[in-house]
Length: 303
Image (cartoon, rainbow, N blue to C red):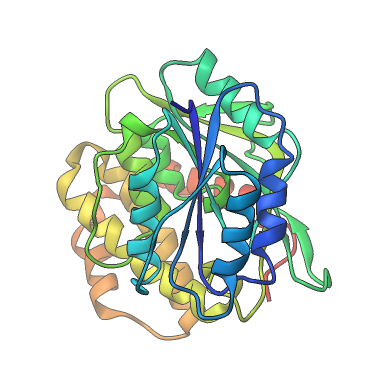
């Protein structure tokens, strides 16, 4: 059985999937691993390229036999649920792993049994490389920064999805109705007492940011949608995790402010949430959230 499963979710990425798979196959890893690919019934020829790689590397690559388009959320669950490894690393089919990424994450999980998740910085880029920028480091400045659920509740998502590697036994949600953001799962991974996540202050993945691609962060419209999904998660967790109310409120305050700035209009329901829960306001936590969010964001603004 593989120690590590690398799961690849893709749709209409025939121009990118080959480079993505090459970036995985050239990684140097000292544990048994598999690559599990779920193409969401792409009409553009992505599946043909995936099948060619599976024929070249039958001992490493498994391609899920998909016969219909199910959308990105269900495709995500389909490929993650099919993974057999103790550790699971996610990458989208248009992103690129940089040398040393997987081994660095495996080493941390091997040496820190309390650690359930490892993520890291990224380099954003467009196809023509006219837009290239790095995400920032956490303010602490150390190479490895361990953090807990309360910090995750405050900070929000500090890394792109294609940087995540997690322990398979930390995930309990196998299906989810509707869209979701990765913050939902990081809260789940860290829900057990004594668990921690680790952020590597190094750039180990390239995250594609074209206006036309499906990534939420790649366009203004996508970022608006991501805020809507995230704020829904925040309100849900605020109502169920009372011990983290001040942390979640600080996160929600900044997210709702950014959402209103992005769409240039006001959501009465979001403002009402902030008003009726004003007792959870904590200035020190809000200042911390602002400091962290400024630090980890892309150094050059996305178009």
